[in-house]
Length: 184
Image (cartoon, rainbow, N blue to C red; front, top):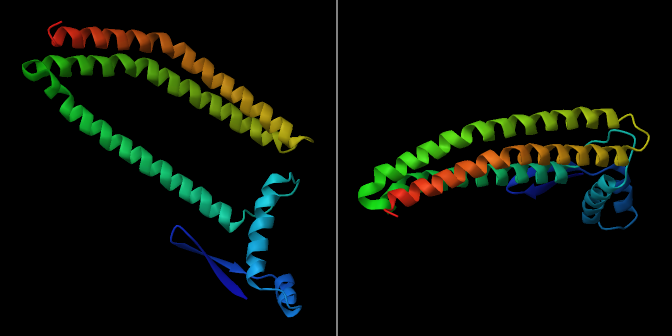
């Protein structure tokens, strides 16, 4: 028997197992089979296994929805940033050009430290990815993965810490520049 789960308007086909068919013949409710499949799939994510089971459709749908949310938030952030950039200078009236110059200098100042931080974080992520692959053959995969994630987090924190002082200087210079533009 086939069923369809709807997730964010996306239909995901689910085929009832032969166990579900026999359950229906035994007088149990067929709708419970799908719920049981989903529940067992979600519980299966919590129980460590050594095999590579297929990802349940509900989890695939959830991951896709989460990615859509992230894409939407990024798009909204980009739109808000563009709106701010276009109206920012008008706050300074006749000195709008001065404020825009401050903003350009700040963007250029931050580019170096942010670029180094992004590259550093990417290196941390790559190391974590390799560590995660190595954990697959580890007898205690969960502990191994937690250790890899912790190391990755600490690595990324070091990256942010290294860039914080130069970024703070950029911010201070930007604020001082804007105060000058405001006539202060």
